[in-house]
Length: 408
Image 1 (cartoon, rainbow, N blue to C red):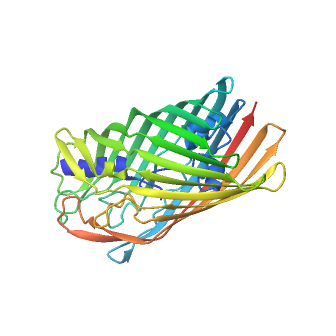
Image 2: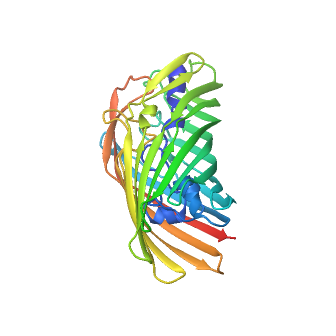
Image 3: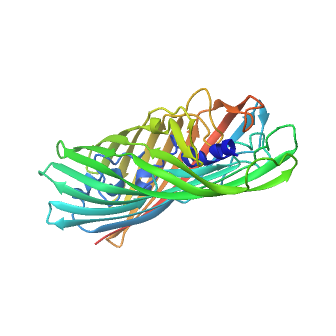
């Protein structure tokens, strides 16, 4: 039962919806349309996420609320045999922000809530690697107060707290003990944790047209705790109790993002960003069930690059286009069915419309194309069947995002 639980608890660290690792970057509809190219200059309350130092651009109170709908899916083969399509449905990570000047034009306050990690995978209950996972969901919410200071006319700095809450849930259908004895178990694991990190940010305006930004996000150490239960069928029921407690230590990675924004004309703007993420913190996971054990995942640090453009067709209507590229951090030799492997191409576009003087609505869309890749996965929970080849093809994701803003 210990080996079974190790494989089950590891879900909390490695589910994804076709973003590098299990990171989420859909934190405003405008950012979705511009390839997240809003780090050097943001111009609205979503600066809480992209670069809190950019809050100094918000000269009045602003609020923004919104949501993204994300639907990942792919074709799966195991040892060359087609399985049912992996399609977990739609996931709705929300975002909300407020920005306000506090002391004149020198000190600014902001608060944001958004999702930095999460989503999930879902396969048929009877597919060939059902012992590894059949369904996984992870949801993470960041609650983020920020203070920004304008040091000079051109230079701003900020710091903020990142209060992180994670919930996770997993189902799998492993064999019981001997793979040639017709006994199965369906396990269910659910748990959560809350912990804190921080972020540091700066913005520098080189001139009236060019702005540079730099953001550091710290590690967040989570000790995930939860309960599991199981339903058994068939013969060979000789392992452990049907329920119990488990915990896993997971270190969410630190990251550094650099960005630049440039105003080509009064109506035409562009932005680019480059992110390095310390995914090697997921190189292994420490468990306590209750004896300490470790599972190696062989993740490595990886990057993400994105850029986008925005054009004002009229005083009130803007169009956007963007592109991002995610490098896959997972190990090349062995993998898990909980995270389909492969680098990602993300193509985006969007629109924004201002109305009633103080209101703005933004819509964004991303289409993610994940490169076809294969990984060797252990063929049974205890290794009796050796390694099996999992191939992911036609891996895509739709992301639809909407945000509504009000400026007081």
